[in-house]
Amino acid sequence: MGVFFPGHCETSIVKALDIIAKLIDVKAREWTAKQAQAVSGALLGHTQQSMAKEWFARQISQQAVAQLLSRAGWPTISIAIGFFESQVPGILKA
Image (cartoon, rainbow, N blue to C red):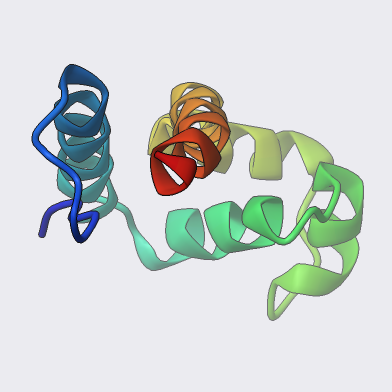
């Protein structure tokens, strides 16, 4: 897995984005099914409360969702995704 932008040289930002993608992939491979489900919900913009009530086969607490997200590394991954998304438009314009 890697990041490739056709026609763009290997700039330091492209290399950084590639590293970010690889690190997220390494972490995601360690997720349990419930952690992956919680991260999927977070990626789709669901709140922890709504995921707790509707996202899992049986209702769990908001605290349990928060714990799943924390153990999955979501707080840091969401920052990395935000950085990734902020950089891609500039790369594509170049």
